[in-house]
Image (tube, each protein chain N blue to C red):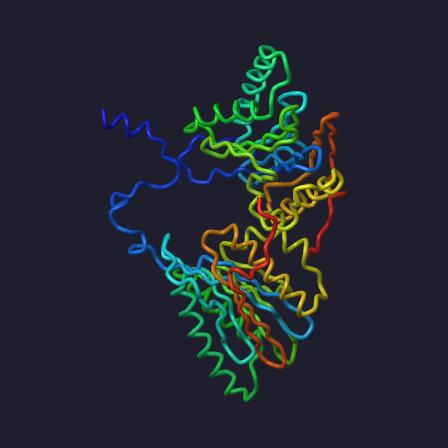
Amino acid sequence: MEKHCMDSQVKGVSTGTTILAAIFDGGVVIGSDSRASIGGEYVSSKTINKVIQVHDRIFCCMAGSLADAQAVTKAAKFHLSFHSVQMESPPLVIAAASVLKELCYKNKEELQAGFITAGWDMKKGPQVYVVALGGMLVRQPVTIGGSGSTFIYGYVDAKYKPSMTKEECLQFATNALALAMGRDNVSGGVANLVVITETGVEHVVVPGDKLPRFHDE
Amino acid sequence: MAAAVATMMPNLGQQISSKNDMIPDWTSQEVSTGTTIMAVEYDGGVVIGADSRTTTGAYIANRVTDKLTPIHDRIFCCRSGSAADTQAIADVVTYQLGFHSIELDEPPLVETAANLFRASCYRYREELTAGILVAGWDRRKGGQVYCVPIGGMLVRQPVSVGGSGSTYIYGFMDSNYKPGLTKEQCLELTAAALSLAMERDGSSGGVVRLATISEDGVERRVILGNQLPKFSTH
């Protein structure tokens, strides 16, 4: 992710990252790369964590500027915990996604940010929501984002199946991130994955040298 | 009051044209083969493929374009970028190669054709918008694929994709291509990759045109829209 350029009129502010989320049978996997870069020339951090926990079973990833990411997720965390206390129950995933959507839509001129929210709740089980750049909210079984995502649309379309097992889904997500990191120069580092199910949350980190290698011509 | 409202309006990306809705954009936009093209080497020849959409802005000027252009008996090129530029370059190279082949009194090399493309694309790089894949078969090196992207670089690759739709299939290609595929596997891979790109890229679509070039000659086929490989819809 880049330090945000203040000129938000500039078309295509680089969102140097690859993020994805996918539903499997019984849960959801959300993951990202770990590179933060400045201007696509200097890697300012090789191990940044872009998968942010906003509640016990709800995580979100952001594509966009690092500053916007931190500010928005901080606000979202606050809103969500307040909402959860008022409701006296864990928040729904759609509530988390809606909070992000409100923030994105109300501030669409200042923000250059897209979010993927993934989680598990009692009402609808595993869900993935994507909040696109202008503030649209859409639910999808699998979604990808960030600059590296353009290279893996074909792979994801071809390989994703709705009812995979947890292991298959983890392998799918790792492969997709590895392929994107292999082609996008502003995505890289390790693959940070989080598996969310009814029973809990599992963090999986795949270091760069353990990532699957594909035919390198 | 009007000025205040205008500054409040988000300027997200596109400039607001003064002509806007009155005049359709296909009267002012250049014809572009925003496209997806692909070429794969196998032992004994090459498989090339392309979509069939040519656009002028939002209008599809030709939905059954043939972007696989013969340059010589066993040498083809796949064109992407400006339709006018690529047609002109292909015509020039066809002439130059034909002349060269007569002088030599033998079939030309694929590398020669690729170099002729590169010469034109590099010399006139400021004026041209052309991304070309040159593929064919010759006796010296068998099946070869050469990539001449915008700017005029030349590189040989066992498999290469090009055009606006190509960005979406890099991941698919990296994970599915292995050296040593058979001709049928190459055809399947190309058809699948092009279908995936056509699903995601607005400038690619229509039918998939494939061609196989080998010592025995050129074999062309078309896969119609409803016969394209389907992937799980989500």
